[in-house]
Length: 629
Ligand SMILES: [Zn+2]
Ligand SMILES: [Zn+2]
Image (cartoon, rainbow, N blue to C red; front, side, top):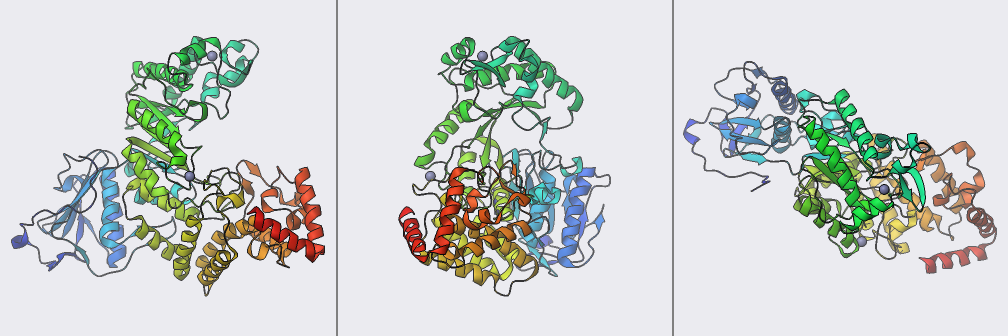
């Protein structure tokens, strides 16, 4: 029954009573219209009306008033409207034409706001592509079909991603992002679906493992024969008591009884040290031999205590991640437990239902079977070499559809959350694509991308679209797979010199006559291409290129100018420590602080110095690279 988006045609019986501002083809909204609110609107209704009023004023170039009474030519909002939302799911909306006027109503906390944004997008062409690039075509008349009846129900209850613009409240509202922790939406905006306390990897902290290394080593995980504070032992009743007390303490401090949903994360730490003590192993063996059994059993008990304490609007969230990814047998999550399945091991050159992702699909199907509140933590960045191209563009939409079709109710797509330290790729484009697919996995994404490219890159956007097609066609390493931890050169299969030249020509065409922000965006996104070429020794970075070393130095300088201080996750570079030999002779993948002093890097520097001096070696290097790739 669910999720119909689009214009549902209903017979229009209203032609006889149309107001003056009507015309063949639809209801015409012009500067004489107003936004109709109830006499005593809630802050939430007032905010939605103001969103609408401002959008209309901007589009029409005439100040549109908000009124509490009008006979005609109005867009009624919230309880002033007569749109029937009694059958619409929570946080959905209905935009309907009635008596020649427009009625917008929403459900639960966020529906009305979303409806106001949808009206502006659908009928005024208003697009919030980034927090700074908002397109609102000017017109003297907005036409809405006489029989317009748009119904929307959210596909996911929790939607979140990061990068830059998704942290902005207005962008999030327009593009349907509602999850914490990357944004805060006030109550008038419908509020955020918030995590109380930390967002992830909280178990060690909640169980205070660090405290008991001496006094109670049995509270800690027994891993490889050693007790370690990296994870707790999840079958120890005292550990459960400590964790539960800390969760209840968090709730006592931060619980909001008016929020529709608050989440406390009880998630394993980010390591592989699961407990292998006798009791944990015995429990897991009774449940299919899966590590997720002890995790789920532990979290279920915390969730029971939270429910018993009267926190009806709180859910306890846990991970199905690395060692706990596969679902257990003979145990199911409580109804106030959220399981967040993580796609960390997936291939992103292909969608989740491709052969290379069959394990994840099995886990998704298994969890989907037993969990009524399944969330997914997805990924969309190369964390090992973040400057590089991460060509996952062709899987974003299909993956969101697959998640939705497996009853996933919340999705967080982890992008490059350190974008302020490394923004060289397609951060805003990917954030927009993901937001739109979370809002509606079946949206016309091609058209959204086309609009984005034009708005963000200017006239060069068309060429960027062709470049993205080339990247997508080459996504993945030799074996065709693409992980979030690949080497830079491995993110795209080897390209012929002709394809590289063609891509170079497209970048050149995109930048031709580009100025200002367009040029800045193009040059920034091109950094990832230059980095890939340098890593793959192609184009101007080829062994046969006499300016190979100079180009690497130039790339390095341009990265610095672009504010890049983190080449891979969790590692801040100190540029003062870079020496010229490293930049000129090592591969960019080796520039990072972790690698630069390694013996193989020093060897390469020595070798490349030789190559630079002796053209014959350059030819050998070129042939070697050709064979190697
Ligand atoms: Zn144990
Ligand atoms: Zn694959």
